[in-house]
Image (cartoon, rainbow, N blue to C red; front, side, top):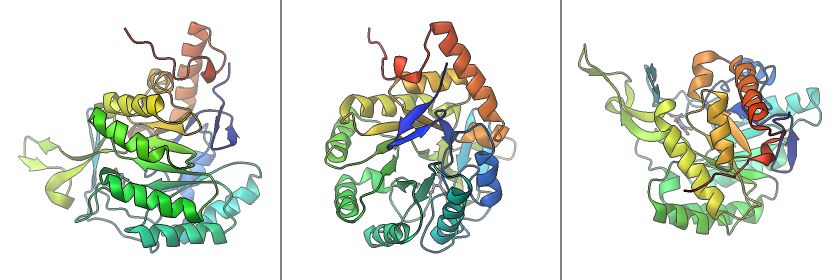
Length: 311
Ligand SMILES: C=Cc1c(C(=O)O)[nH]c(=O)[nH]c1=O
């Protein structure tokens, strides 16, 4: 039994990695994921300049997941480019993911120019879905802007690149986004980012639990799995087959991974549960997924990927 996968033209010895934003802020965290059973890692979304992010508390774990309004804290894209470029030397042939996000098209292009000028040989994940920068709408909900960004990006950047998308909740939005995405040579789409602007309340103190944005923040964890699975499958149904899918959202067990793959995912990313359990989680997830595959008689994820049945 193998949980190996191929994504963006690279082979990975299993189909699990961290979600951007979790266990990927600095070299210690990235090395912890590197040295775990995860197939690879993605960095925290890098911006042109380092950012402190929003005031704390800005992350809170609840019974069924998490709420965050980090505000894009990161060490700046140069830090992550330097780290991955060095890490590639230490692990020749391994493919890593670099997440980037600009605050406008010009910044996106400047970030990509930095990647082009660097030794980075991995996959770029362009984050179109940060819900927590005050005053900035999520790019992923502005379809014309997404179209304009992808047109400009693929005019200048010709190496493997995927986009991190927010969750959509309307079938027509899946149709409209897929029509745009299918115009471009994307390696993959990654669905979903957190469900934006949820609210969690401490009943005893009658108070919100995070400081930024009067307590409003992106929701992750068990809460979001049905939405994540629907977004993975909706894009799997609609996208050209050469645009693969990374499934992110609500993964806590091998069963959750199995469901994401059944919906069409070629790779899965773990966020909240990784934050809770640490990188050792990838050992448990691997064992659980392999047990399910053994039980069902599958030897590779391609035996069941995308093969969700309808009634
Ligand atoms: C990169 C910003 C993001 C953040 C953040 O830094 O607030 N939180 C998320 O849940 N998703 C993001 O994409």
